[in-house]
Length: 607
Ligand SMILES: *[C@@H]1O[C@H](CO)[C@@H](O)[C@H](O)[C@H]1NC(C)=O
Ligand SMILES: *[C@@H]1O[C@H](CO)[C@@H](O)[C@H](O)[C@H]1NC(C)=O
Ligand SMILES: *[C@@H]1O[C@H](CO)[C@@H](O)[C@H](O)[C@H]1NC(C)=O
Ligand SMILES: CC(=O)N[C@H]1CO[C@H](CO)[C@@H](O)[C@@H]1O
Ligand SMILES: [Ca+2]
Ligand SMILES: [Ca+2]
Image 1: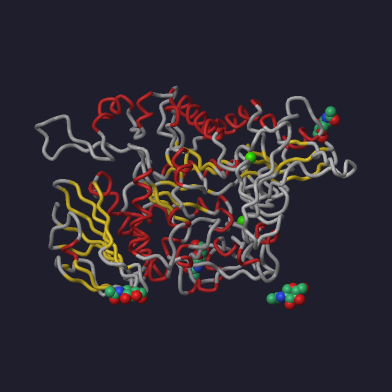
Image 2 (image 1 turned 90 degrees about the horizontal axis):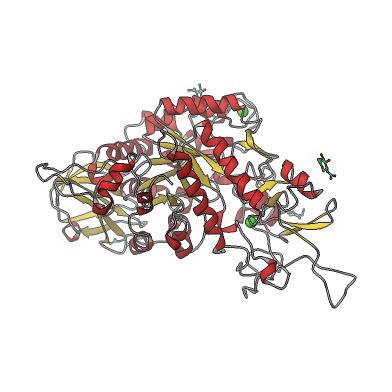
């Protein structure tokens, strides 16, 4: 570890400086040690602490060679888009060698690039060009499982020395009632439905797969596996990547039969009478998810990355955790149990899992404040509005909320995360049953129910312009269809328009880059009515920034003078596309009526 001071949570580029200031940091705000400076110097943030991170779904971003599949050269050709949009870092869903059963989340070679996406040289070019442009590059690290095509599995299934215990192998469960018919090792259900155990003819044992049959769970109790995970991380760190998004963390470890009389314990029934035993949710996953032991693995990874950095002249490498779990378990990814540190932050999925078009302003305020309440002191918050596993943001909320939601993302303290397309308000694409390729939909659904499970609609290709295939590809047929609304919603049209989601997005990221209030200030958040919330950011002598957002589907009148820490008059900095208020309009601190979904970002005098 570079320095024990990093345990405090907020790291800065220069470790010695962190030592000097660690004691003075409230969240983000630092009083100067030098009394003659006025206004005081503000602590220089490390690159990741207030950045905008953009998730690329590589298969759907840009196709450079006309095979209908996005690729690395395509991404490299579009890196200027991130500069244009004001993004600081990209994270890419997996680009490693894969049979593509789960579109890259089934990795067969963790040390190479998938052929449809390009070559190692293409990756190195992408990385070099991104760095030239000042964009950090994060990879998707998928530690829970390997593809059944991976060498590890081929070697483990015939018990090659050193690989015997790489995966979770189990004998059939004895069946006292019918000894001739042994059972699966336990009742565990895969995330994609059906038993999590699969019989292997070669080894004559079952193996565990918490996801697809072709995604074999690593055995994290094996020291060899633990070491191999570090080797993989090192390989990509040596290449120069800036960090990792860590996939599916709650599933890293399962109950140990040693603690259960030599058997894998059954998960207890959840009591959900609508589900059948093979369906996810029929049981409560107490032995297969959120095991406390898994956090030690994460804390070890963080130690390892800190050690890697300590011998080198390098910018900070970050670890971002993915785990859909409750708030208590989520916060453990930050670390601090037994004084250890974990991820720089776990993704905050509350806007995906706890809020929707049905939510009122009080729900928004409650959900946002909940994160701050539970987050350990000194840590950096983050906000996620969508990703490749969930319906797109405007589809879960409403079209008229796009700018308000992007404004919230950018004006809240901490890191903003954008999923590919959110900057132009892309909605879910329609994907017919015939065109469906998502394993979750194919396994769990049929031609009538697949839409409940399919992640394809959130993965349709990016809309660059209104030409063929939205400019994504010259292929006759793309891997997923282009969403039908591409002529209306695309980047080119929004760059031309005077008012557009993209223009609002650009204004917001520009403000983030320059406003010390946003990077270092305090926040106050309140529901001014059932429908309208106000978020105020303030910092001593600096301009105050306020976001007013009517999250409802109708007009709302509120009294701005009730907003905390706000002085008038306010000036509109940017407003949602359908708003009648323009940049520069003055807004008095009194009654104001907002149309459905209207959002105003305003600046005002210091609080
Ligand atoms: C196991 O399989 C691998 C890969 O097919 C092969 O190289 C190796 O010789 C096999 N080992 C044993 C003990 O059968
Ligand atoms: C779904 O498939 C079944 C069986 O092939 C067929 O009878 C039914 O009409 C299909 N439903 C739809 C909505 O296509
Ligand atoms: C649309 O976008 C693609 C990708 O950037 C580009 O190759 C193509 O020339 C564009 N078409 C038009 C008509 O601008
Ligand atoms: C005060 C006011 O007019 N609020 C409206 C905002 O929109 C919602 C949803 O349409 C209405 O229910 C409220 O009456
Ligand atoms: Ca391609
Ligand atoms: Ca696992």
